[in-house]
Structures are given as C-alpha cells and as structure tokens.
Length: 96
Image (cartoon, rainbow, N blue to C red; front, top):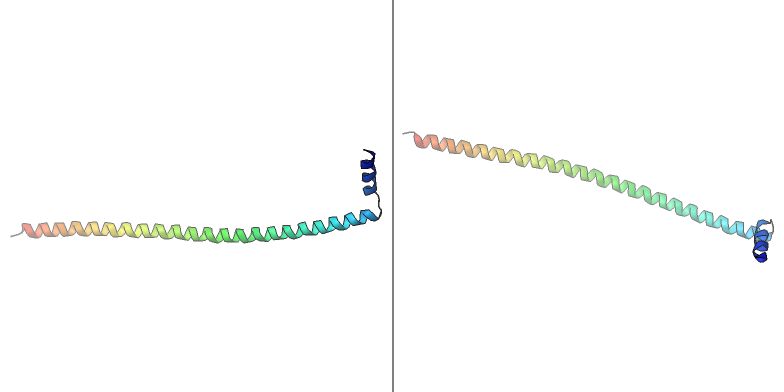
C-alpha cells in the first residue's frame, strides 16, 4: 500500500520520469488524432457512396415506374385493338 502511494506521488511530481510519460502520452494522442482523421475520411467516403447508391436506386425506381406505365399502356392498346378487330370482324361477317 505504501509503495503504491510512493509510486503515485512520484508520478505526480515534476521530475525526469514525468517527462517520459508526457512524451508517451503526446505520441498516443497524436496516434488517436491520426486514427480519428482516418475514421472521418472513411465516414465521408461511405456517406458519398451511400448517397450515390441512393440516387441510383431512386433512378431505377423511376425507370421501373415508367416501364410499368408503358407496359400497361401497350397492354391496353392491344386490348383495344383486339376489341376493334373483333367488332370489325363481327360487323363484316354479319353484312351480306
């Protein structure tokens, strides 16, 4: 217990050992700062990729909607054409 107190007191004083810990702490903090910068850059990159992907997804959804409308329109045109052909065929067949 006494040796722990002495160690703590030695670390709290401004002697030569204190400078060693400050240097180590400074290196550690610089390392953390570099890592934080890398994480921020990775976050920015991922955010840009996500926005690009969302834009592509939105475009794909719009194209899908337009394609579905076109397909529905063509289906209705074919149905109308079939009705007209049946009616025209029925009318011609019923005429003498």
